[in-house]
Image (cartoon, rainbow, N blue to C red):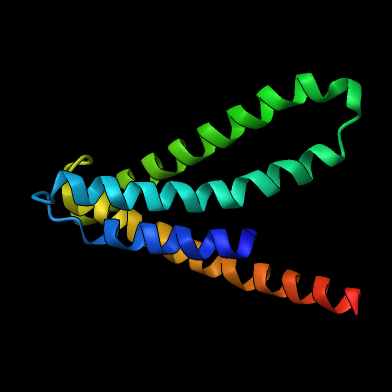
Length: 129
């Protein structure tokens, strides 16, 4: 599930690396829906895996913490990447070039994460045999 989610996330993020500033609102919305589906496919199993290690009586305390870390991590990571790329491009932090560059990096990092994900899937399948 996580592997498929990573692929869908890359498919949804790659077009954002090509932003020009005059992009169609409906196109951007469709891309974000695809990206959101991919992120949902990756974070839900990851959350379930994390909650396995939490005692049942502490789950009500752990859930808000997991949710907060998910939201802050994604937002903060994108913001920091946009600022870094903007500084490298000598562009305004909110410019289309800076946002496109940041999403290029995000797509690349997500693609790199596919490697350990694929290895984990193979390892899991070999233990079932």
